[in-house]
Image (cartoon, rainbow, N blue to C red; front, side, top):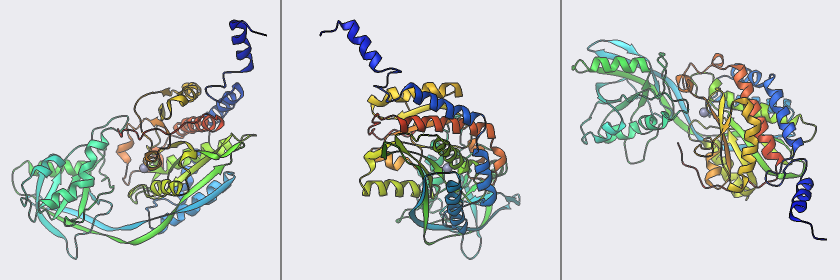
Length: 472
Ligand SMILES: [Zn+2]
């Protein structure tokens, strides 16, 4: 029998009831389940308790220190207690940097102490403090433009100021002074470099963070001044007289350490070899307690994963939570994770990866790097997230730092973009502590991650491989 076109359409739509599963792989029950996860998280999640536990019981956990091992043990025990089907460790090896002490003072013309912090990876000033005249540069480009040899025996001071934005885009243009300041200053003959902190705070806390050396350029000590101290130094220099600084820094790189990515899974019921991943980094800098960077991310994503695990029926695909090792000193955990997947030919089984590493502010946008054929799934997920104040943005975005390495190998990604307007007030400082976290904001993020990852795991649409994204 030939059906008239309208009848054919009708019978097709009936066959697809209760909703159009064809382009999203999701039916009305799946959506209702995701909405239930979302609403349960919003009613009050365990995320704050998880980050409270990490910051209280472990605290600062710089990679390669004894606290790194305590953090790994904490995560393994916590994830197990949260009811995941499987919790396991994967090794991550990296060089160990140790901070011993750091001190700075102006010797003349206006003697007074300055608040500094050594940058991660920096060498110390040696057996005795370094005393030298300071030369100020507006930014890294001005330092690069200085004549060769013009800084012989001097301390270069890079004064560039990070600009505050909700999406953190002021960080990229400013952070080169931290990463490359020592190399560029040493090329001009400098004995040390100090920078204005890469941060937006006006508190008297210096912001640390990684810096790098290159083999062909001499290594010199590198430190950041708190922003008020950077202002103070600029005011002294503006008077036109030589300003002499004493730097006393003890820090060193000592051998290698093997830490671990801590991985927890909810096993997929139909497609267990296909995975969606969410996570944050377990390590922190040593100055604060690593609450917003990135205890929050670990707590949000582990709580979201555990909520999915409480469902009566697991989603089709496996949900994998990853607490990455040593993000701060060079994305070692994310690189090791991606390399292990490449070595075992598992990149294509990675259906979607997301990461929470931008503090504890609320999420306002969902962005993704997926095959265009999978966009209907992202749009459908966006509808579930809309009551949380989250909109789908079809352009821009990027995976988190630890998801970046596997995305570079072709894995698809999603980003839940957070409001980071005050993130860089506390980032990498002694002021990164639990009180900066609003528990209700954490619940909103757990709600978003739980709904996103449940639906991405429940759908059987192939998210495909996406080209590596542009970094913002
Ligand atoms: Zn971080």
